[in-house]
Amino acid sequence: MTASDNSPAHIQTLASRLPRDFQWGSATSAAQIEGAAALDGKGPSIWDKFCSEPGRINDGSNIDVACDHYHRFRDDVALMKWLGLDAYRFSISWPRVQPLGQGAWNEAGFAFYEQLIDALLEAGIKPHVTLYHWDLPQALHDSIGGWTARAIVPHFAAYAAEVARRFGAKLASIATLNEPWCVATLGYETAQFAPGMTSRKTAAQVSHHLMLAHGAAIQAMRAVTQSPLGVVLNHTPSFPAEPIEADRQAARIDDGLNVRWYMDPIFRGSYPADVIEYLGDDAPQVEAQDLALIQQPLDFLGVNFYTRSFISTQTPAVPAPGKQGFTDMGWEIYPKALTQHLVRITREYSPPPIFITENGMANADTVVEGRIADVERIAYLHSHLLALAAAVDLGVDVRGYFYWSLLDNFEWNSGYTKRFGIFHVDYASQQRLAKDSAHWYRALIENFKLTRRDGAA
Ligand code: IFM
Image 1 (cartoon, rainbow, N blue to C red):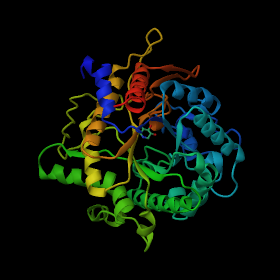
Image 2: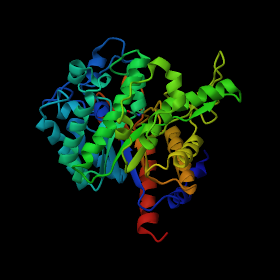
Image 3: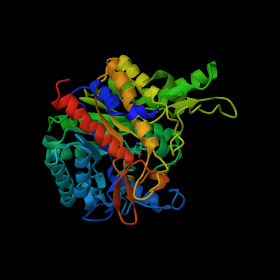
Image 4: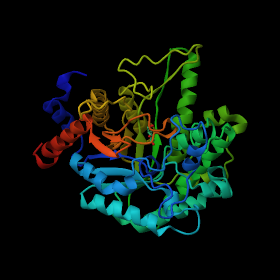
Protein backbone atom coordinates (compact mmCIF):
# COMPACT_ATOMS: atom_id res chain seq x y z
CA MET A 1 0.00 0.00 0.00
CA THR A 2 1.53 3.30 -1.02
CA ALA A 3 1.07 6.58 0.81
CA SER A 4 -0.97 8.00 -2.06
CA ASP A 5 -3.57 5.25 -1.54
CA ASN A 6 -4.71 7.12 1.52
CA SER A 7 -5.07 10.45 -0.23
CA PRO A 8 -8.46 12.20 -0.19
CA ALA A 9 -8.74 11.73 -3.97
CA HIS A 10 -8.21 8.02 -3.65
CA ILE A 11 -10.75 7.78 -0.87
CA GLN A 12 -13.21 9.75 -3.01
CA THR A 13 -12.77 7.33 -5.90
CA LEU A 14 -13.49 4.44 -3.56
CA ALA A 15 -16.60 6.18 -2.20
CA SER A 16 -17.96 6.85 -5.68
CA ARG A 17 -18.04 3.11 -6.42
CA LEU A 18 -20.38 2.30 -3.54
CA PRO A 19 -24.15 2.79 -3.42
CA ARG A 20 -25.33 6.14 -2.12
CA ASP A 21 -27.17 4.56 0.82
CA PHE A 22 -24.22 2.33 1.75
CA GLN A 23 -24.12 1.93 5.54
CA TRP A 24 -20.83 2.52 7.32
CA GLY A 25 -20.70 0.69 10.59
CA SER A 26 -18.76 -1.03 13.27
CA ALA A 27 -19.55 -4.15 15.29
CA THR A 28 -19.20 -5.65 18.75
CA SER A 29 -20.80 -8.44 20.75
CA ALA A 30 -22.31 -8.54 24.22
CA ALA A 31 -19.97 -11.04 25.91
CA GLN A 32 -16.89 -9.30 24.51
CA ILE A 33 -17.62 -5.79 25.76
CA GLU A 34 -20.49 -5.51 28.24
CA GLY A 35 -19.08 -6.80 31.53
CA ALA A 36 -21.70 -6.62 34.32
CA ALA A 37 -21.64 -10.39 34.15
CA ALA A 38 -23.82 -10.93 37.20
CA LEU A 39 -25.57 -7.58 37.50
CA ASP A 40 -29.26 -6.67 37.44
CA GLY A 41 -30.44 -10.23 37.17
CA LYS A 42 -28.21 -11.46 34.33
CA GLY A 43 -27.71 -15.21 34.43
CA PRO A 44 -24.34 -16.83 33.72
CA SER A 45 -23.51 -17.81 30.14
CA ILE A 46 -21.40 -20.74 28.98
CA TRP A 47 -18.57 -18.22 28.47
CA ASP A 48 -18.69 -17.13 32.13
CA LYS A 49 -18.26 -20.77 33.10
CA PHE A 50 -15.63 -21.48 30.43
CA CYS A 51 -13.52 -18.55 31.67
CA SER A 52 -13.62 -19.99 35.20
CA GLU A 53 -12.07 -23.28 34.04
CA PRO A 54 -8.27 -23.29 34.35
CA GLY A 55 -6.33 -23.28 31.08
CA ARG A 56 -9.23 -22.32 28.81
CA ILE A 57 -8.33 -18.63 28.26
CA ASN A 58 -4.74 -17.80 27.25
CA ASP A 59 -4.28 -14.93 29.69
CA GLY A 60 -6.49 -16.45 32.40
CA SER A 61 -8.91 -13.54 32.11
CA ASN A 62 -12.71 -13.43 32.27
CA ILE A 63 -15.60 -11.28 31.11
CA ASP A 64 -16.76 -9.95 34.47
CA VAL A 65 -15.88 -6.38 33.45
CA ALA A 66 -14.58 -6.55 29.85
CA CYS A 67 -14.95 -3.00 28.41
CA ASP A 68 -17.58 -2.09 31.01
CA HIS A 69 -19.84 -1.11 28.12
CA TYR A 70 -22.88 -1.88 30.29
CA HIS A 71 -22.09 1.25 32.29
CA ARG A 72 -20.35 3.26 29.58
CA PHE A 73 -22.66 2.67 26.61
CA ARG A 74 -23.59 6.36 26.33
CA ASP A 75 -19.93 7.32 26.00
CA ASP A 76 -19.43 4.55 23.47
CA VAL A 77 -22.38 5.77 21.41
CA ALA A 78 -20.75 9.22 21.50
CA LEU A 79 -17.59 7.66 20.01
CA MET A 80 -19.71 6.14 17.24
CA LYS A 81 -21.29 9.52 16.58
CA TRP A 82 -17.85 11.14 16.42
CA LEU A 83 -16.87 8.52 13.84
CA GLY A 84 -19.94 9.41 11.79
CA LEU A 85 -21.24 5.83 11.77
CA ASP A 86 -24.51 5.14 10.01
CA ALA A 87 -24.93 1.80 11.72
CA TYR A 88 -23.85 -0.20 14.74
CA ARG A 89 -24.02 -3.98 15.03
CA PHE A 90 -24.21 -5.44 18.52
CA SER A 91 -25.62 -8.55 20.10
CA ILE A 92 -28.14 -9.16 22.83
CA SER A 93 -27.00 -11.38 25.65
CA TRP A 94 -29.64 -14.10 25.92
CA PRO A 95 -28.91 -14.77 29.63
CA ARG A 96 -29.20 -11.04 30.37
CA VAL A 97 -32.79 -10.95 29.14
CA GLN A 98 -33.76 -14.53 30.02
CA PRO A 99 -31.42 -15.88 32.72
CA LEU A 100 -32.53 -19.52 32.43
CA GLY A 101 -32.90 -19.51 28.63
CA GLN A 102 -36.56 -20.36 29.14
CA GLY A 103 -39.37 -19.05 31.29
CA ALA A 104 -39.21 -15.63 32.96
CA TRP A 105 -37.87 -12.54 31.21
CA ASN A 106 -35.47 -10.20 33.00
CA GLU A 107 -36.95 -6.71 32.61
CA ALA A 108 -33.74 -5.02 33.79
CA GLY A 109 -31.88 -6.73 30.96
CA PHE A 110 -34.39 -5.57 28.36
CA ALA A 111 -34.23 -2.07 29.85
CA PHE A 112 -30.48 -1.94 29.17
CA TYR A 113 -30.95 -2.78 25.48
CA GLU A 114 -33.87 -0.39 25.17
CA GLN A 115 -31.69 2.44 26.47
CA LEU A 116 -28.86 1.47 24.14
CA ILE A 117 -31.18 1.32 21.11
CA ASP A 118 -32.73 4.68 21.99
CA ALA A 119 -29.31 6.28 22.47
CA LEU A 120 -28.27 5.00 19.04
CA LEU A 121 -31.42 6.30 17.37
CA GLU A 122 -30.98 9.65 19.05
CA ALA A 123 -27.44 9.77 17.63
CA GLY A 124 -28.77 8.96 14.16
CA ILE A 125 -27.20 5.48 14.16
CA LYS A 126 -29.12 2.45 12.90
CA PRO A 127 -29.16 -0.45 15.38
CA HIS A 128 -28.45 -3.89 13.86
CA VAL A 129 -29.00 -6.67 16.36
CA THR A 130 -27.63 -10.20 16.53
CA LEU A 131 -29.53 -12.58 18.80
CA TYR A 132 -26.87 -15.20 19.38
CA HIS A 133 -23.20 -14.24 19.54
CA TRP A 134 -22.11 -17.29 21.54
CA ASP A 135 -23.25 -16.53 25.10
CA LEU A 136 -25.73 -19.35 25.67
CA PRO A 137 -27.44 -19.28 29.09
CA GLN A 138 -25.47 -21.77 31.19
CA ALA A 139 -28.75 -22.88 32.77
CA LEU A 140 -30.05 -24.03 29.38
CA HIS A 141 -26.85 -25.98 28.80
CA ASP A 142 -27.21 -27.62 32.21
CA SER A 143 -30.95 -28.31 32.04
CA ILE A 144 -31.43 -29.64 28.51
CA GLY A 145 -27.90 -29.90 27.05
CA GLY A 146 -27.93 -26.55 25.25
CA TRP A 147 -27.20 -26.80 21.53
CA THR A 148 -26.66 -30.56 21.74
CA ALA A 149 -30.41 -30.96 22.28
CA ARG A 150 -33.04 -30.52 19.59
CA ALA A 151 -35.28 -29.23 22.37
CA ILE A 152 -33.37 -25.92 22.27
CA VAL A 153 -35.10 -24.93 19.03
CA PRO A 154 -38.43 -23.67 20.46
CA HIS A 155 -36.60 -21.91 23.31
CA PHE A 156 -34.46 -19.96 20.86
CA ALA A 157 -37.49 -19.15 18.70
CA ALA A 158 -39.37 -17.86 21.76
CA TYR A 159 -36.42 -15.65 22.74
CA ALA A 160 -36.12 -14.33 19.17
CA ALA A 161 -39.84 -13.55 18.98
CA GLU A 162 -39.74 -11.69 22.30
CA VAL A 163 -36.84 -9.49 21.17
CA ALA A 164 -38.53 -8.85 17.82
CA ARG A 165 -41.86 -8.04 19.48
CA ARG A 166 -40.29 -5.56 21.89
CA PHE A 167 -37.68 -3.91 19.67
CA GLY A 168 -38.41 -4.88 16.05
CA ALA A 169 -39.91 -1.52 15.08
CA LYS A 170 -36.73 0.30 16.13
CA LEU A 171 -34.19 -2.09 14.58
CA ALA A 172 -32.55 -1.80 11.17
CA SER A 173 -32.08 -5.58 11.12
CA ILE A 174 -32.12 -8.70 13.26
CA ALA A 175 -29.70 -11.56 12.64
CA THR A 176 -30.40 -14.90 14.26
CA LEU A 177 -26.90 -16.38 14.66
CA ASN A 178 -23.36 -15.14 14.47
CA GLU A 179 -20.96 -17.61 12.83
CA PRO A 180 -22.63 -20.98 13.46
CA TRP A 181 -19.47 -22.71 12.17
CA CYS A 182 -17.51 -21.28 15.12
CA VAL A 183 -20.25 -22.20 17.58
CA ALA A 184 -20.40 -25.83 16.45
CA THR A 185 -16.81 -26.60 15.45
CA LEU A 186 -14.80 -24.57 17.95
CA GLY A 187 -17.25 -25.14 20.80
CA TYR A 188 -18.07 -28.84 20.39
CA GLU A 189 -15.29 -30.40 18.28
CA THR A 190 -11.99 -28.64 19.01
CA ALA A 191 -12.84 -27.33 22.51
CA GLN A 192 -11.25 -23.95 21.80
CA PHE A 193 -14.53 -22.22 22.64
CA ALA A 194 -17.27 -22.74 25.22
CA PRO A 195 -18.56 -25.18 26.22
CA GLY A 196 -15.27 -26.93 25.39
CA MET A 197 -16.40 -30.29 24.02
CA THR A 198 -14.42 -32.60 21.73
CA SER A 199 -16.76 -34.67 19.59
CA ARG A 200 -17.13 -34.26 15.83
CA LYS A 201 -20.43 -36.13 15.94
CA THR A 202 -21.83 -33.80 18.60
CA ALA A 203 -20.56 -30.77 16.68
CA ALA A 204 -22.33 -31.92 13.52
CA GLN A 205 -25.58 -32.41 15.43
CA VAL A 206 -25.14 -29.00 17.08
CA SER A 207 -24.70 -27.40 13.65
CA HIS A 208 -28.04 -28.90 12.57
CA HIS A 209 -29.77 -27.65 15.71
CA LEU A 210 -28.32 -24.19 15.06
CA MET A 211 -29.77 -24.27 11.55
CA LEU A 212 -33.15 -25.41 12.88
CA ALA A 213 -33.11 -22.70 15.53
CA HIS A 214 -32.29 -20.14 12.84
CA GLY A 215 -35.24 -21.26 10.71
CA ALA A 216 -37.67 -21.43 13.62
CA ALA A 217 -36.56 -18.01 14.88
CA ILE A 218 -37.04 -16.39 11.47
CA GLN A 219 -40.51 -17.91 11.25
CA ALA A 220 -41.44 -16.76 14.76
CA MET A 221 -40.09 -13.23 14.20
CA ARG A 222 -41.89 -12.79 10.86
CA ALA A 223 -45.15 -13.08 12.76
CA VAL A 224 -44.37 -10.08 14.97
CA THR A 225 -42.04 -7.69 13.08
CA GLN A 226 -41.39 -6.04 9.72
CA SER A 227 -37.72 -5.57 10.57
CA PRO A 228 -35.32 -7.10 7.99
CA LEU A 229 -34.26 -10.58 9.11
CA GLY A 230 -31.14 -12.58 8.27
CA VAL A 231 -28.15 -14.54 9.50
CA VAL A 232 -24.42 -13.88 9.84
CA LEU A 233 -21.96 -16.48 8.53
CA ASN A 234 -18.17 -16.52 8.72
CA HIS A 235 -16.65 -17.24 5.35
CA THR A 236 -13.00 -18.16 5.03
CA PRO A 237 -12.52 -19.18 1.39
CA SER A 238 -10.36 -22.29 0.93
CA PHE A 239 -7.42 -22.32 -1.46
CA PRO A 240 -5.39 -25.44 -2.35
CA ALA A 241 -1.76 -24.74 -1.44
CA GLU A 242 -0.44 -26.56 -4.50
CA PRO A 243 -2.00 -27.55 -7.83
CA ILE A 244 -2.27 -31.20 -6.82
CA GLU A 245 -5.43 -33.31 -6.53
CA ALA A 246 -4.98 -34.03 -2.80
CA ASP A 247 -4.87 -30.32 -1.94
CA ARG A 248 -7.78 -29.55 -4.26
CA GLN A 249 -9.90 -32.26 -2.66
CA ALA A 250 -8.97 -31.13 0.87
CA ALA A 251 -9.82 -27.54 -0.06
CA ARG A 252 -13.19 -28.68 -1.43
CA ILE A 253 -14.02 -30.41 1.86
CA ASP A 254 -12.81 -27.42 3.86
CA ASP A 255 -15.08 -25.19 1.78
CA GLY A 256 -17.87 -27.72 2.28
CA LEU A 257 -17.52 -27.63 6.05
CA ASN A 258 -17.11 -23.87 6.37
CA VAL A 259 -19.20 -22.35 3.58
CA ARG A 260 -21.54 -24.85 1.88
CA TRP A 261 -22.61 -26.64 5.10
CA TYR A 262 -24.46 -23.46 6.11
CA MET A 263 -25.20 -21.78 2.77
CA ASP A 264 -26.74 -24.89 1.16
CA PRO A 265 -29.46 -25.60 3.74
CA ILE A 266 -30.30 -21.90 4.13
CA PHE A 267 -30.47 -21.05 0.42
CA ARG A 268 -31.00 -24.43 -1.29
CA GLY A 269 -32.78 -26.55 1.28
CA SER A 270 -30.20 -29.38 1.36
CA TYR A 271 -26.92 -30.32 2.99
CA PRO A 272 -23.94 -30.83 0.63
CA ALA A 273 -23.70 -34.53 -0.30
CA ASP A 274 -19.89 -34.61 -0.28
CA VAL A 275 -19.76 -33.31 3.30
CA ILE A 276 -22.43 -35.79 4.45
CA GLU A 277 -20.29 -38.53 2.93
CA TYR A 278 -17.12 -37.11 4.52
CA LEU A 279 -18.79 -37.06 7.95
CA GLY A 280 -19.99 -40.63 7.59
CA ASP A 281 -21.41 -41.88 10.90
CA ASP A 282 -20.89 -38.42 12.40
CA ALA A 283 -23.41 -36.82 10.03
CA PRO A 284 -26.34 -35.30 11.93
CA GLN A 285 -29.78 -36.80 12.32
CA VAL A 286 -32.13 -34.82 10.14
CA GLU A 287 -35.90 -35.26 10.29
CA ALA A 288 -38.45 -34.82 7.54
CA GLN A 289 -39.42 -31.14 7.15
CA ASP A 290 -36.21 -29.92 8.87
CA LEU A 291 -34.74 -28.52 5.70
CA ALA A 292 -37.99 -26.81 4.77
CA LEU A 293 -37.91 -25.07 8.16
CA ILE A 294 -34.27 -24.02 7.70
CA GLN A 295 -34.82 -22.60 4.19
CA GLN A 296 -36.72 -19.48 5.23
CA PRO A 297 -36.70 -16.46 2.91
CA LEU A 298 -34.18 -13.91 4.25
CA ASP A 299 -33.90 -10.16 3.81
CA PHE A 300 -30.12 -10.02 4.08
CA LEU A 301 -27.03 -12.16 4.43
CA GLY A 302 -24.25 -11.08 6.79
CA VAL A 303 -20.78 -12.16 5.73
CA ASN A 304 -17.85 -12.01 8.15
CA PHE A 305 -14.57 -12.07 6.26
CA TYR A 306 -11.08 -11.91 7.70
CA THR A 307 -8.72 -14.15 5.74
CA ARG A 308 -8.49 -17.23 3.54
CA SER A 309 -7.64 -20.85 4.40
CA PHE A 310 -4.54 -22.14 2.65
CA ILE A 311 -5.01 -25.90 2.50
CA SER A 312 -2.00 -28.18 2.24
CA THR A 313 -1.92 -31.97 2.59
CA GLN A 314 1.90 -32.08 2.67
CA THR A 315 4.00 -32.75 5.76
CA PRO A 316 5.15 -30.27 6.80
CA ALA A 317 2.26 -28.20 5.44
CA VAL A 318 3.04 -25.64 2.75
CA PRO A 319 2.63 -22.30 4.53
CA ALA A 320 0.46 -19.47 3.20
CA PRO A 321 2.67 -17.03 1.27
CA GLY A 322 1.44 -13.98 3.17
CA LYS A 323 2.68 -11.49 0.60
CA GLN A 324 0.64 -8.76 2.29
CA GLY A 325 1.57 -10.00 5.74
CA PHE A 326 -0.24 -11.66 8.63
CA THR A 327 -2.32 -10.14 11.41
CA ASP A 328 -1.56 -10.52 15.11
CA MET A 329 -3.87 -13.58 15.06
CA GLY A 330 -1.47 -15.12 12.52
CA TRP A 331 -4.17 -14.78 9.84
CA GLU A 332 -2.94 -14.15 6.30
CA ILE A 333 -3.95 -10.78 4.84
CA TYR A 334 -5.48 -11.63 1.47
CA PRO A 335 -8.18 -9.11 0.47
CA LYS A 336 -8.53 -10.43 -3.08
CA ALA A 337 -10.37 -13.44 -1.67
CA LEU A 338 -13.14 -11.12 -0.48
CA THR A 339 -13.90 -10.00 -4.04
CA GLN A 340 -13.70 -13.51 -5.42
CA HIS A 341 -15.85 -14.94 -2.66
CA LEU A 342 -18.60 -12.33 -2.90
CA VAL A 343 -18.79 -12.88 -6.65
CA ARG A 344 -18.87 -16.65 -6.15
CA ILE A 345 -21.66 -16.74 -3.57
CA THR A 346 -23.70 -14.28 -5.61
CA ARG A 347 -23.38 -16.53 -8.65
CA GLU A 348 -23.99 -19.80 -6.80
CA TYR A 349 -26.70 -18.82 -4.32
CA SER A 350 -28.38 -15.59 -5.52
CA PRO A 351 -28.45 -14.42 -1.88
CA PRO A 352 -30.43 -11.42 -0.62
CA PRO A 353 -28.51 -8.12 -0.16
CA ILE A 354 -25.21 -8.67 1.60
CA PHE A 355 -23.70 -6.80 4.52
CA ILE A 356 -20.06 -7.29 5.45
CA THR A 357 -20.98 -7.71 9.09
CA GLU A 358 -17.37 -8.16 10.26
CA ASN A 359 -13.93 -7.42 8.85
CA GLY A 360 -10.88 -6.20 10.68
CA MET A 361 -7.53 -7.12 12.12
CA ALA A 362 -5.83 -7.74 15.42
CA ASN A 363 -2.67 -5.70 15.60
CA ALA A 364 0.09 -5.33 18.18
CA ASP A 365 -0.78 -1.67 18.76
CA THR A 366 1.39 0.50 20.94
CA VAL A 367 0.53 3.81 22.51
CA VAL A 368 3.33 6.30 21.90
CA GLU A 369 2.87 9.73 23.44
CA GLY A 370 -0.88 9.35 23.47
CA ARG A 371 -1.15 8.18 19.88
CA ILE A 372 -1.52 4.82 18.14
CA ALA A 373 -0.11 4.86 14.62
CA ASP A 374 -1.73 1.64 13.42
CA VAL A 375 -0.71 1.95 9.79
CA GLU A 376 -1.16 -1.82 9.37
CA ARG A 377 -4.85 -1.57 10.29
CA ILE A 378 -5.40 1.36 7.94
CA ALA A 379 -3.82 -0.64 5.12
CA TYR A 380 -5.97 -3.67 6.00
CA LEU A 381 -9.14 -1.61 6.14
CA HIS A 382 -8.38 0.22 2.94
CA SER A 383 -7.41 -2.88 0.96
CA HIS A 384 -10.54 -4.72 2.05
CA LEU A 385 -12.76 -1.78 1.15
CA LEU A 386 -11.16 -1.72 -2.29
CA ALA A 387 -11.84 -5.47 -2.57
CA LEU A 388 -15.44 -4.84 -1.54
CA ALA A 389 -15.78 -2.05 -4.14
CA ALA A 390 -14.36 -4.41 -6.77
CA ALA A 391 -17.12 -6.90 -5.93
CA VAL A 392 -19.72 -4.13 -6.23
CA ASP A 393 -18.26 -3.22 -9.64
CA LEU A 394 -18.82 -6.85 -10.62
CA GLY A 395 -22.49 -6.70 -9.67
CA VAL A 396 -22.53 -7.91 -6.05
CA ASP A 397 -25.24 -6.23 -3.96
CA VAL A 398 -23.37 -5.08 -0.82
CA ARG A 399 -25.30 -2.63 1.34
CA GLY A 400 -22.92 -1.95 4.22
CA TYR A 401 -19.67 -2.61 6.02
CA PHE A 402 -19.07 -3.09 9.74
CA TYR A 403 -15.50 -2.80 10.97
CA TRP A 404 -14.68 -5.41 13.63
CA SER A 405 -14.39 -4.03 16.18
CA LEU A 406 -15.36 -0.67 17.60
CA LEU A 407 -13.32 -1.34 20.74
CA ASP A 408 -10.44 -3.55 21.73
CA ASN A 409 -12.20 -6.33 23.60
CA PHE A 410 -12.26 -9.88 24.94
CA GLU A 411 -11.05 -12.03 22.06
CA TRP A 412 -12.51 -15.32 23.34
CA ASN A 413 -9.84 -17.90 24.18
CA SER A 414 -7.14 -15.28 23.50
CA GLY A 415 -8.52 -13.17 26.36
CA TYR A 416 -7.43 -9.53 26.13
CA THR A 417 -4.16 -10.26 24.32
CA LYS A 418 -5.46 -9.41 20.83
CA ARG A 419 -6.55 -5.94 19.88
CA PHE A 420 -9.07 -5.58 17.02
CA GLY A 421 -10.51 -2.17 17.95
CA ILE A 422 -10.35 1.12 16.08
CA PHE A 423 -10.55 2.52 19.59
CA HIS A 424 -7.88 1.40 22.00
CA VAL A 425 -9.10 0.38 25.45
CA ASP A 426 -6.89 0.76 28.49
CA TYR A 427 -8.47 -1.98 30.60
CA ALA A 428 -7.17 -0.60 33.89
CA SER A 429 -8.72 2.85 33.47
CA GLN A 430 -11.33 1.90 30.81
CA GLN A 431 -10.18 4.91 28.82
CA ARG A 432 -10.89 4.79 25.10
CA LEU A 433 -8.41 6.29 22.62
CA ALA A 434 -9.03 6.75 18.90
CA LYS A 435 -6.33 4.96 16.93
CA ASP A 436 -5.10 6.48 13.66
CA SER A 437 -7.39 3.97 11.92
CA ALA A 438 -10.37 5.58 13.65
CA HIS A 439 -9.32 8.98 12.26
CA TRP A 440 -8.90 7.40 8.83
CA TYR A 441 -12.32 5.71 8.93
CA ARG A 442 -13.92 8.94 10.14
CA ALA A 443 -12.40 10.89 7.23
CA LEU A 444 -13.57 8.25 4.80
CA ILE A 445 -17.15 8.35 6.09
CA GLU A 446 -17.19 12.15 6.13
CA ASN A 447 -15.91 12.27 2.59
CA PHE A 448 -18.45 9.68 1.48
CA LYS A 449 -21.30 11.67 2.97
CA LEU A 450 -20.09 14.88 1.33
CA THR A 451 -19.47 13.47 -2.10
CA ARG A 452 -22.01 10.65 -2.35
CA ARG A 453 -24.98 11.74 -0.30
CA ASP A 454 -24.95 15.52 -0.16
CA GLY A 455 -22.95 16.06 -3.34
CA ALA A 456 -24.06 15.73 -6.94
CA ALA A 457 -21.92 12.73 -7.86
O1 IFM B 1 -13.98 -11.47 17.89
C1 IFM B 1 -14.51 -12.30 16.91
C2 IFM B 1 -16.01 -12.15 16.82
O2 IFM B 1 -16.63 -12.37 18.03
C3 IFM B 1 -16.57 -13.13 15.83
N1 IFM B 1 -15.89 -13.04 14.56
C4 IFM B 1 -14.45 -13.04 14.56
C5 IFM B 1 -13.92 -12.01 15.56
C6 IFM B 1 -12.38 -12.01 15.55
O3 IFM B 1 -11.90 -13.27 15.90
